[in-house]
Length: 97
Image (tube, rainbow, N blue to C red; front, side, top):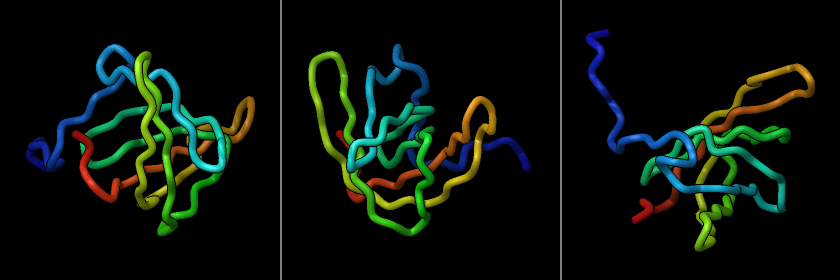
């Protein structure tokens, strides 16, 4: 590896960078945004996300809400204590503005 960035879109991490204060995975499971780009999001949640399934993610900033549809690309366990947590990568059906 030569250290070159292979992603098509730059990632934003932290609320100060992306402005998302809350996220939910339908049907209403709370999630935390680890990072996000125009083409996808990496979420952490207490609920396992099944790779290959279609999903709807609700994102909320201090001034607006939006729902974005996508597909679960991968999901893995990120923590076992104090409870099981999962990190799932979601590829959006269409790029965010």
